[in-house]
View 1: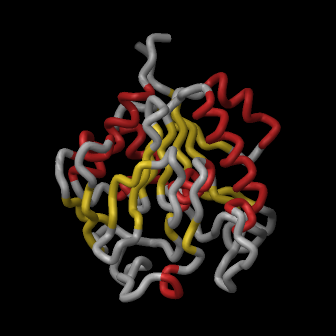
View 2: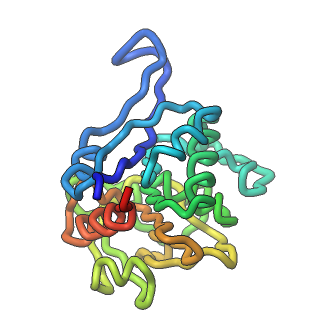
View 3: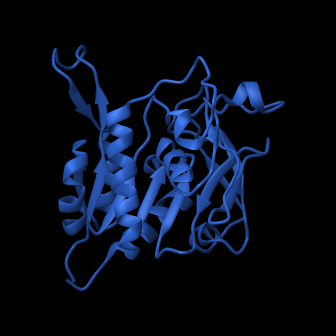
Length: 239
């Protein structure tokens, strides 16, 4: 059995800081945890026209997070909150890549903003700014380091996530101002924060289609490691 090749989507930044040219970015821990769980990470530049070529080679896909949002027009919203920032080429690539992988029934893991994009792809809508839509909301953009828990989530029994982590409560970190809102018939909610915010989704039509609102690559709980191990296991093939 060969090591599964795992595509990891990159963030994109405008000139400034690292380079005076546009540049890609990826936290090292995204790749570290894929390697530790038995996968071979491959960073994916935003080339929408190369989706089919990537699809042929990849065994799994991680759609990462970032300090930007899904364009509200993608889920039918007619208004756009003042806090919304988009990265259109990145989103186009990630949307096309995730849809292609799912169509081929290859595993997809969406993390934070990646979970939100997955939710939209599967027919859901988003809360554009949690403080404006959720009463008594938690600090979902936690003030403490991302290496620590921001809050816990209730894991829904009987879901794929529950089978993976084997617990009904999981400590998670939190770095988002948007969240999943309305769900489609294809979406199963698998984790919820104490304030009612959706923290995880899955679609059981596929071999492995899982989204989590937190960042398991920080490995703040054993459940985070189990999520990554299960994802890589699902990506293993007899090539």
